[in-house]
Image (tube, rainbow, N blue to C red; front, side, top):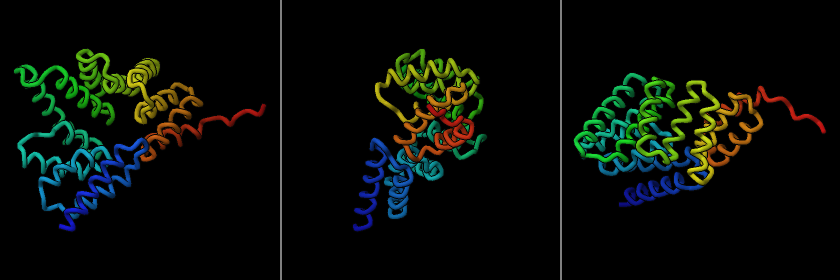
Length: 243
């Protein structure tokens, strides 16, 4: 009973950390690891950890937990597993999962088992996973464009669209879409700020990029990609001129 209580508390602590305004992902993963160690023999509990692990960047453990969920429920989580596998650098396995997820979503949509909103999420999530991994970007862009057509005012989809343009080197189009996403969201978001910072850095707007990247890191200190982008950019940034 004691270990069960501690594991449940650790999961709550991890969830609270992930939902905070400035989450520390390493701290959240530490809570999740404790919960997993204490109740790893309880498949139902392990399945509950999957999404939290993915959000916290614990992709290898997330895959394990998603697979446990699939065995329990029969519900496939190919979109999520595919994304995690790509983040782990397993391009072949991740691509197969995402392709399978897209085929199933298209069939479900055609049969009326899911609506346009759910189908749009599947298109966007698969498209973003490919774009984020810098794989099959042209195909991914078409998936995201279809998601935006189905739900034109969804900030997450427009952010994906901007990131796809960034991968294609279309920095002006990317900035336009990312700024739209930020306006529609109505609040400062770490991921959109990181994307904007990366775009403006490539476009040579280094001071603006620095501000956006620093704000992204203030909101999400564990964003290693934003930190790396900022570090690389600062090497190119000229020193401020003296008045």
